[in-house]
Picture 1 (spheres, rainbow, N blue to C red):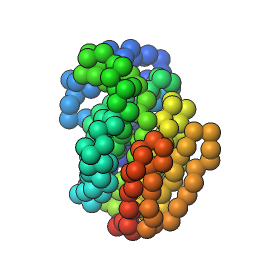
Picture 2: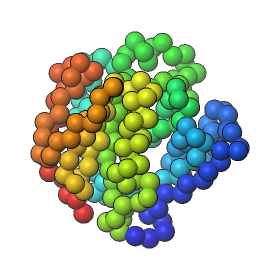
Picture 3: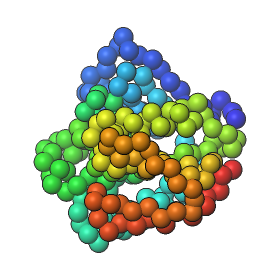
Picture 4: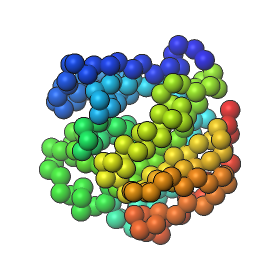
Length: 204
């Protein structure tokens, strides 16, 4: 693993970025993927390699196609930053917001970083270009991120983990359900009728 594979974590708890300051930071540094935890830690993520980027796109495409048919909400890519109710700013690998909730936002809120928790999120545990895992992308950190989504009001979350050939399903008020790959994931009442077939994925 090279230095470039590692995310940069900046503990700026004493700085207290406002929402506007964080927005301006991201806008003036478009080459960086930046998140912020509820504790004020900034996380600058490195770009992913080809295999991880392809996995992310393939899995997100099925969600977009389902939504194009049902027109039940809005689908978002990993470039979208959501301002979660608990104070963090996060970018899921894929996200979906139910239409009426999206329409309740003002045009300005929709244009900037939406102050809303998605109804559904998906995270893919990516691999570094050196085929290792970064400190931020280890399983413990990603699980904490999924719990943060649940605490913010997300109704369903999938953490897809090619390294261990598993997927973890998160629902509010419940422990994570772990399944081995290949498996079939259902959108349940959140994404009615959506089925995602997840085959075994390259682990390295």
